[in-house]
Length: 246
Ligand SMILES: Nc1ncnc2c1ncn2[C@@H]1O[C@H](COP(=O)(O)OP(=O)(O)O)[C@@H](O)[C@H]1O
Ligand SMILES: [Mg+2]
Image 1 (cartoon, protein in one colour):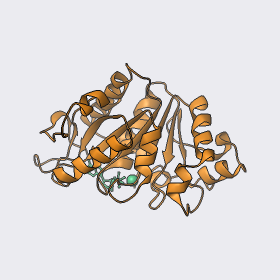
Image 2 (tube, rainbow, N blue to C red):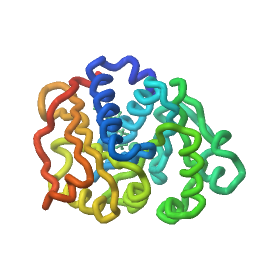
Image 3 (cartoon, rainbow, N blue to C red):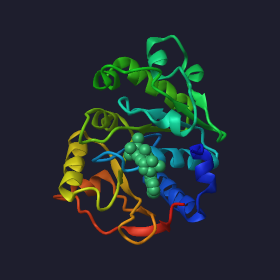
Image 4 (cartoon, rainbow, N blue to C red):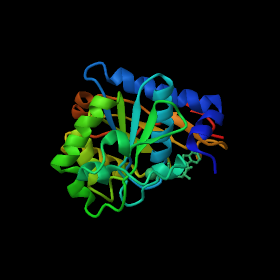
């Protein structure tokens, strides 16, 4: 299977346009407060988070940003794999002080885009992301990179995404229509709200049930204050911005 950077470059231009629209919306959301750290999560498994994280990373790097993608799905790490990397070192070595962040990251085929793998088996992910050392690592990353994106496990199953979301400048959800129940998506929003996360929007990925082709959609984006004014988060029919994957 191809490296995800090649996959992005070779995919239909409409998909790249959809990803660039997401990138632009993240930048628009930055108007009231700068977004440097972004958490990408979902209510349930396999909605395409890692794919969207990787594509967005390439899109930001193509726009001249220095970008770090952080593997934060400690049970099923997948980022290094989709970039066809075997870094060996990663977050654990940074936290233990054995490696500097610069030495633990891995280059990708896209200039300006780097990934930070786990560096081994993480035994207590929830404790790890709440540790002082982790906080320090994020501080260091902020000094070195323009954009830092955390690829996380689904919210329903684990606590780390909510913890990371509470610390990050912004959080984005990846949903698959037809695969997520409205009640589950709402419970996710409720959990993020409790964590004081700033949810800037959702990406509707792979809307295969909408037509015969696979579709990427950008759903909607709203500020935390708008979300607070709502009694509940409405799941509305998404507005299509791009079509067909590959
Ligand atoms: N829009 C899409 N169309 C078709 N396949 C997709 C799409 N988005 C993701 N996939 C595939 O679905 C699988 C799960 O995607 P992944 O990004 O790993 O999801 P997650 O990180 O949420 O578990 C991967 O094999 C990926 O290539
Ligand atoms: Mg994943």
